[in-house]
Image 1 (cartoon, one colour):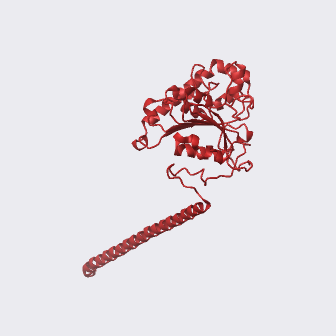
Image 2 (cartoon, rainbow, N blue to C red; image 1 turned 30 degrees about the vertical axis):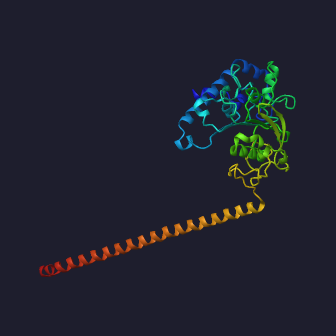
Image 3 (tube, rainbow, N blue to C red; image 1 turned 90 degrees about the vertical axis):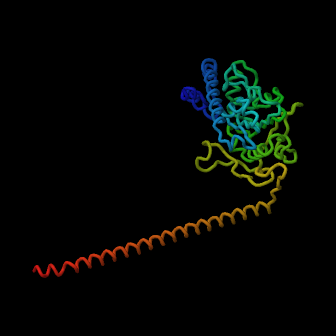
Length: 362
């Protein structure tokens, strides 16, 4: 059933192997290798099959308004990215605008069945299919060895005699000759982070915005352009796929977020550059707008004015409703008073008719 298929995930793996610590990169490799040989590959394939069927059913049940939307993207992170990268459906593929693969390396590793292929869309998507893959340079689960010997995937590969890992989707993109596929490796301040939203929120936002705006031309997008000074081209195949190394937008130092906004002890870049030419995602590629400080201030003032107008409108509506309610209450009170007076008059008349008879009897 569903619960059995979900027994092996990263959290469950930690429970089975007490020395595996989330995000710390330490592992009892012998125990992990034993699990890899006997049970883990089979259950990993069951997890993928479960997620694949869920995704197919979701696509079948999409409302008509969404099923025929101008753009449709498939995105996933970590386990979800593994499913998004491998998922293939001919009917859906024709309507797909692009795939977004976060925190997954598109390689055969401990999180896949040994018999499964790490091919994007099972090797069935067109060579022109847009793909954007983002992963941390020192991802504690799927990064390559050398700079990050603590990666679980790298330890399993080395100790089981597997092929060396590359730590990103670029090798698979190149193998499949995907002309509109982009792989981005994020240094993340050289921290072993699996998530991408704490140390690199601004560059991730800029990359995702550019891809959603024009997935077919991602390689020439503003965040990847040399003049932006954020990304360096590391490799590019003649067929088109490319890999960049991108630093965070903003040189502020990381700080520990207040409260439980992130994992315990995980520092974050808390300065957000939401306004600016790299962050404009609502405008089309043909009519992009350079968001100057004056324009940004105008947008803020306009938003404030609209908010104030809506607040006044809401107050006016509430006042009208209260006025009508009071008028109805007064009208109801008048009707009740009239009814009471009419009833009192009728009783007085009846009493006046019976009083003479009663006096004669006395």
